[in-house]
Length: 238
Ligand code: IPE
Ligand code: IPE
Ligand code: MG
Image (cartoon, rainbow, N blue to C red; front, side, top):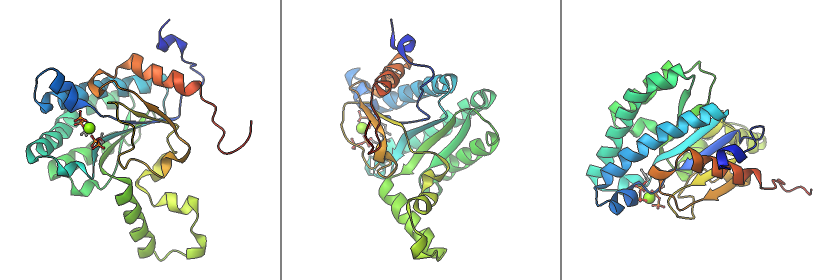
């Protein structure tokens, strides 16, 4: 039996979030430049989006570029920004045909104009789709989201007494999605790297050594299968 067959199709996580890590190491292992790893990662992402949509996952959010990733050498940053453009140009048509809705979290206005425009276009084209909501976290970091949310709350002069979890959530980039049920990080590191620190309060975590370009459909099913074995109590007793 494989994990695909072992997963309980009636208990698929509503929201899966993925920290796609390990592209650089995947390329290094093959004595190739990091750029080749990022391209291979984009190819795998395409397959994972399709699989999630087919399995009935309602929200898929992927960490594609963090607020800290600007620290990387200029040529790697440019390569990644260019890859976002080509990925969207190549894939949006098919995603649209498959009813995928594209979204984004993060301070996307600070992306290079071409990437920003392509992203906006993809969101507009797919806005009425009812399949998986596939969000790219771009120039995203939770700490930045927190200050952005506080600024907007203050601008709107909202009543301090009314600030609770629900109001706070409305001001975060993630306001349009439920909290992730399952957070996957590939590439072997056991950390969140500033990803959804608030939304992850009761998420189940799945860390694996598999490098992102090798994280295929069967690996995804393995993560979902492991998630299904967990006992989620949310602070209650069984
Ligand atoms: C993840 O792969 C992709 C991004 C952060 C954009 P990395 O580029 O971090 O790959 P490693 O961690 O160096 O292997
Ligand atoms: C996290 O990976 C960000 C993305 C996957 C986009 P990094 O490779 O940037 O994280 P660190 O530096 O290992 O924490
Ligand atoms: Mg990394």
